[in-house]
Image (cartoon, rainbow, N blue to C red; front, side, top):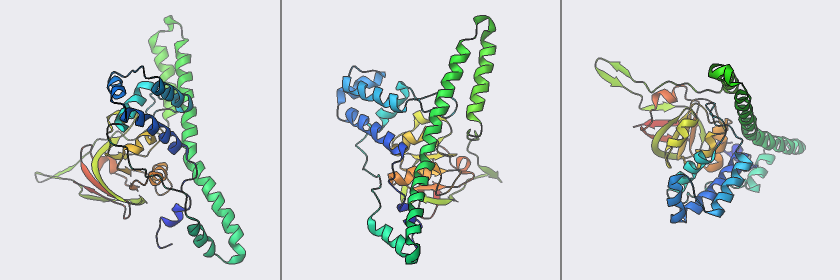
Length: 308
């Protein structure tokens, strides 16, 4: 199609777990947004609000075994309360989730192939939708396995006798966390500039793969692991190596997404389009050229990020 996002639109709204999870979290945030007394209580991290506590407990029962990135274990109550308070810090975000694709779009797709092949095309479309959903949901399911493995490693280490001492326990935990984090850790590089003849040079515009339509401007926030999630603020631009399941919980707060890796079918691009958030992926030095605090404009139509 002339519009590269048109076919992707046929795959939207297919029941993605991350969206279901974030919708539940937003409903909890709406309690805080409309109840100033509850919001004030949560500043201490605790509340006696029964409805809120029940909703939070239900959320943790369903999604609390998802591992945070960075080998720091699974979700916990205090971390979630921080994110809920940030969600509730401003007016409720406009509902950006994409609705089911219109029937006419599917008809255009089917009519683009010879009549004798339309049944086959319909089967391919059904397969594509299932694969699209699985491509995203597997991140959630694998994160649950990682979370349980992290708990098992901690539990095993705690069974070591006191005489085995902390060093043995540390070795067990390190081996487990190294296994959990293999291939998933993001580069730890800091933002760099080039100095030439006394002048400091920095990229003004970087180009990647357009992966989510729209244009947005905001302050960049580099997220390298789970510890960075708790400094993320509503309206900031999420810049990362690649979005993992723990990061998708702050996507509703983001005004745009920039990723170092991937293309149109990477996890972050899928969730960005579900929320209607501009997204650019595949910028190899995104987490070097962009620094937290930089004002950036993200053009998801052209795949351009303007810094400054």
